[in-house]
Image (cartoon, rainbow, N blue to C red):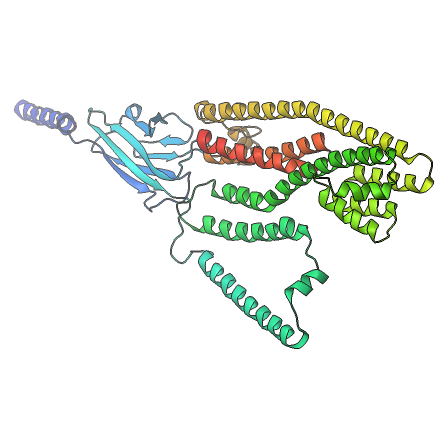
Length: 469
């Protein structure tokens, strides 16, 4: 049996031990004034070459972290409650969403953490994004080396052609005048083939340059393709418009010529003498061709052949049709002056009806241009309001449902830059198609709409550069 005095002693010791056991943690926690420590785990490599990096930050502290106090901000946006943010007592993980991806440049991610004793730590982590960065050893295409090879090849080809021409001059008396007289170069070579070749080489080299050069705009490939389109199509589009206007002038001048031939025949001249007489006084666009026709008549060529020969180079079906009619009339006999006068009147009326029809259709083309302007305004509104829509999952079933269904994947969400690029590409294609439709609608051929395509493409580029990009 333990004496009463020893029992009291043991009880006192037990109480003292229990007191220290309870006070030690309280004392430790009460003395915790150190804020939590935030350390970046990844990404640590700079610059970051992806626009949607995953950021992991470790949290360490002497006591417990108050999870409700953690705040994560992407620039000025609070992303703490976003699906892309995962928070635990020792780690924060944040993946930049596709819809709010980081464009090239410096971006900030701010984190605020507090432990259960109110010790707060705040830190801002800076990240440099450069999606065009190419590491050493991965330079890709050396554009300047390609240009050097092209220049060297051009010089070698020029020297070889020069030596061959010199050989022809010495052996066969070759001259460029003789060559081009025997082998005339068609206009299509200068307005179609050469521009297409130049545009192709420019596009290949420029695309190689912009895709291998750091810091280039995300829209640089689109700019290159637009310039290539202008180079390839521009000369042909301008020539088509000039040709259309010249043909219209020829048609009006030819109708006036028929009136003058009919009047001269009524005055007692036959058709051949009327052509010779008019060639000395005519100052219209047909004056050169009329003088050539008069020379052919003086050489004894038939009137119908002369009229057809004068009409063929004009490239107007209307002129050729009436030239054939007048030539056949001269061979039939009767009263050719009446037939020619009637043909001139019909041709003049036909031209006036065509001009009136084109003026009416031009008003419809203006409506198409206005509709295109409305499209630009709609696109501007859609693009400017897009960032305020938040993080939107555009998958068919949603990420959760897809994972539950066993697929484990969802449709990727495009970055804001990618969305602007897609709208830009669609607008460029719409510009080309709308322009060709206008040309086909007004003038009856797609080639006359290429100039409208160039105008609409230029307007689209200016609009995006000034208002969107």
